[in-house]
Image 1 (cartoon, one colour):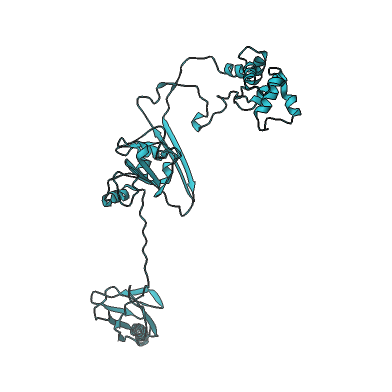
Image 2: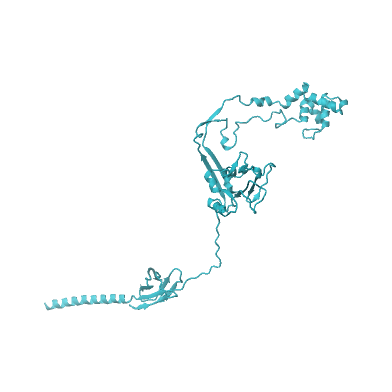
Length: 414
């Protein structure tokens, strides 16, 4: 009985001892974790909110300052640690700290603002001259009366060239010849420039150029000035037109535009038309309209036969060849009169008689039914009858359904 009691007491003492050892170990670990506290301000003493404080050895366990700029962070152990303090716009601070056991280390920090000196800042902007808002500003600031049409509007309306686009401006009308009229004043009194450079015209009766030569895809805007200004030439009365083309592209530019139009009075309805080939919509014929263009038997392209060709047709080819005269030899009256003598329509004695030469010429030309005339005509116009017969003898009207209005343009540049 007594021995059992002693054993029980020994067991209880062992348990108490183990619990005591465990408590002492936990207390030791707790005392090994120190704390760093402090306040972070700027150079003026103002508290900084949201400053990040973290340990360099454990960046995931960072803390931030509160509304008063205060912070508190635990150290992993009693070894030396490095605090890293970062804040946007301020220099980063790295500070080494060490806390033994449960020591609380007070550390206040003052952050300095980060400053970088910029020597020069250049801001460049480029206005888009193809937009309506740009042209409206030009119109508001102009001291003269101007109208305009921009590339933005041309894309909406589907105009393919400058002539079609400018006709939409109030007071401007254009014809099929590519020339325009402003306020009823003829094209003779209209001056046209490209990017400020005057464009001369080959027509002495007009002062304008054909604007359908310029595709709309290459134009930024068209400005029509209707009143005189000191900065403009004075030799116009109707309008001064300035066509402003697009700038040189900085890189390869490819532009493809397609437009479709519908007219409820004609589209998909039968309309009078003409015979056409299957490739007419591409701008060329596939051979449907091919006919002989050489009615002159053996003398190349259609033309009025020369005197040399007529005399050769009358049988004097070998004669002129003996003289060294060909179709490319400069022709003169001497060769012609020699030919008339060889044909027998001009006597040698009358070679220098103008009246006799004129009579021989009329006779050779067939005014008196001379057989030479028929022979020369048949030779020089041998294919005329066949050319006329190559056209079909069909006088009926051609009717077909009108398709959608369609246009397409393509431009490339760099």
